[in-house]
Amino acid sequence: MNPKSHVRPLLTDKAALRLRIVTGIIMFTFVTMHFLNHALLLISEDLAQAALAYFRLIWRNPVAAVLLYGSFALHFLLALRTLYLRRLIGLRAVTVIQVVFGLSLPLLIAQHVVAARIPVMFSGPDADYVSVIRAMWKDGFLGAKMAAALIVAWVHGCLGLYAALSYREWFSRYAQILFAAAIIVPTLALGGILVTGQRLPPANAVGIEQLGRLPSEFEGTWLAAAPNTDIATIERQVYILLAVAAALVLLLRTVRYFRQRESHILITYSHGALVHVPRGTSILEASRVGHIDHYSVCGGKGRCSTCRVRVLESGGPLPAPSPLERATLSRIQAPADTRLSCQLRPNFDLHVALQLEPPEGGDRFSTRTNLEVGREKDVLVMFADLRNFTTIAEGRLPYDIVFLLNSYFAILVPAIEAAGGRVDKYIGDGVMAIFEIDQNGTRDACRRALGAAAKIIAETQNLNNQLMQEFGIDLEVAIGIHYGPAILGIVGYGKVASLTAIGDTVNVASRLETAAKQFNVALAVSETVILLAELAHDGVTTRRIPLKGRRLEMTVLLFSPEQAQSYL
Ligand code: FES
Image 1: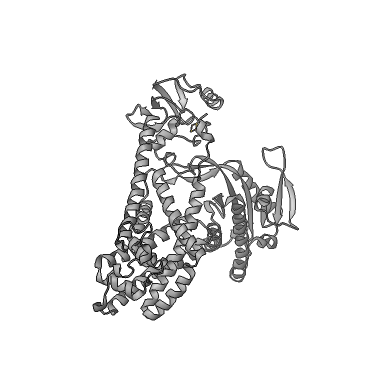
Image 2: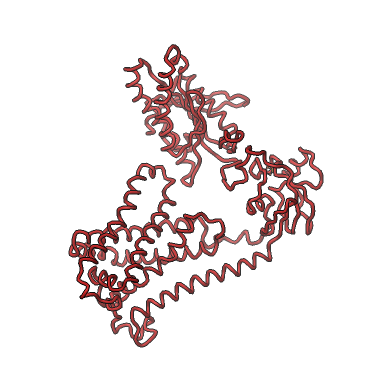
């Protein structure tokens, strides 16, 4: 065992992510208020200046100031941490923009912050809108820098918030408003600055350095490195500090790279590919790193044997197969030189030959880094079907049937998607949907699925009011929900392949939907789901139902339409 595996990192990735989100939100709040203040310049300088006084009252009180500057420092340090830890190759374009904008921001705003804040911290002159905008007009470079800072800060903040919040269930409801705000706020802020700049008489323009020459209190302090320290000197010191921090990170990355090289091994493949990976990396992981098409149906669990390789040459002894690997290899009666690449973690250079080719167009997704493909995961599966739809459809025009079904699906699909679920497939007049467990946990996923079921039931009843008048029919929905492990994988062939869930959990959910019809209720939910959701279910009927192929019966909760709607 690696002795380092017991060393707990000072800051886990999860904690770092949370800190980044919290500090980001604090800074984004500041920036939004600041930009809205700029927008008031469109009305008048006096109004903007008066609002600035309140803005300062809020953000210059000791608690808010510590929060803001602490957030800024922490956010910047976390960015340096990311820069140190992350692989820079293969980053998505949006991540590159996020990183570049984030790192350039301190450079862009250093002058503004130093000129506006440092003097006032030492009872020096305070900057006002008119002086700052005049300074921007006098010095075109400064003006361009400030405008760039405004855009860069806003884009960086919006991208960060989008990454942190877009998966939330409520986000899609407000997405359009948020998008509009993301365009309007910086446009108004820039507009305010531009309009004011044009309004001000250029004769009175002053240089930014005149906004806040350091008062005499600075003499002898850490800021007064030279006898005539001024804003420009401090600004230069800030730039040097940022450059040193960036250089230090790059130096540490380089040291780490060379250290890792010493601990790396070379995996070569018979078809000519080669990959450098740390010792102890599995061959399958090496293939992923090297973007090598490597078949692996069970996603690296040692069960399917599709990832098998022949070991052609090894720079040293190989670790013995684990009992799991041995069992799988003996099941396929593999030759002695064959190993499962997902289980084999060599410590020496290795030369291997892949044994199975992914079928063309069949398992083409399994070599992608999509975690949901070919993996066993705990999911919620929902089956929703219409009771007696075959009888309803009898004797009706085909157009009416299509209309009825589409009206029903127009309720079903948005309800599922709004709750973070995904319609997996349509089965005649029913659907199968999957709700995956996200970072909000199982309880949240169970509640989302139950909420979606409640919404489907409620809206189908509303639809019935209309259908009763026009068609004289009542649609009755029957829904089954179960939670448990399922294999998520791409199933199908060629263009008709899609991600789906397979396994016992799916069969049980389907059985629960049948139970809902059998007991004439709207919703049948396994006891597991209700317990995990931690929701009240007083007065709900409980039954034990047999399951095909199982000796033990299963406890199921049966909800009438009214009871189910309590989860809305
Ligand atoms: S991926 Fe299934 S056994 Fe290796």
